[in-house]
Length: 429
Image: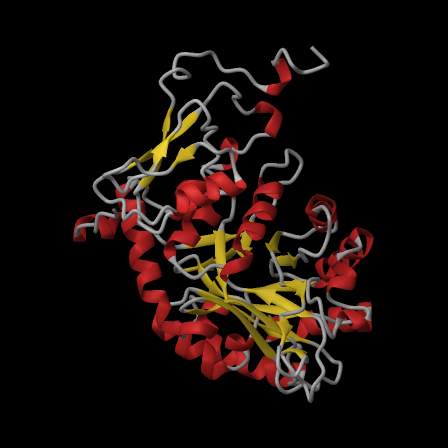
């Protein structure tokens, strides 16, 4: 449970962040997406409490979007766990976008406004940088991640999957930019490290990750048309939302824990609550960006995000966001370093068990046959300690909160830690 901070504690908590020289009153930025397409939207968002925004990606290329363009994946009552989009970047000219950027900066000079860019030639990249700086931009985000529409034109993820191009284009921008440069990386790679290192080698001041994942949303079972349907046809698109968060956390932490990577990370991918934010910050992000959650529930979600993060920092006795950033990175270790002597066993709360027997069913069918049916006269299944390997499956499928918990085995508490590196079964030992 999060303890609400007192008024005095709130005054001591500093939510302001400085990400590679870009300042904002709090770590919550809107990601480059439909919610950041106009001055009207950013003015409304900053009034609601957002600390910064990355403008929807600018380009010189003619953009024509399809209809429809969004697909959603849901589960049960949750209609939008993941979103697939076929939408492209800004349809407006660089000049029009710059006029609107200047308007926003005039009204909210202390909020971060970063321009997302995607161009083809060195001259185009550099001209756009100069135009945006004249408009008062605070920084640049180089869109190396868009996985649809633009990659077919040799931009977006086509660049982001090629470390040499990432380094080269980043260096083009850095040659003329006086404001900080963020490289936005694609997750559509087998290893994020080479791409992140290339951005660093090109002179980037920070990186943003992740962009959307390549995906096909599904198929309408009646028409057999892939979704979202454009006159009965569809295409691969960018997948975002809550469902991509584990992938984003992995990639953020991979860069954060790499000994040769030293840039700040703007975390993105499935952020919609203050809890998500804490996870990204703890695993190495300096701030977070949000898009799909706003497309689901609107700008007002910032209120509980701000109050929740503030309360959490107060509970943890942290005075600023920077104190939280990266605190969990050292707890991620190679599998070979994990303690193989550490064992947990499942325990069922007899007072809250509803006797659904789902834990027994899945353990018997899909795990280790470590749960027996309830004894006669009871409704509570029985854990067989000698067979339980502590896999956690029963606790994850149980429909009652905290009914099944995993507790350290009494026989393993006092055992010395043994990793695979020094385990007697390791053939190398």
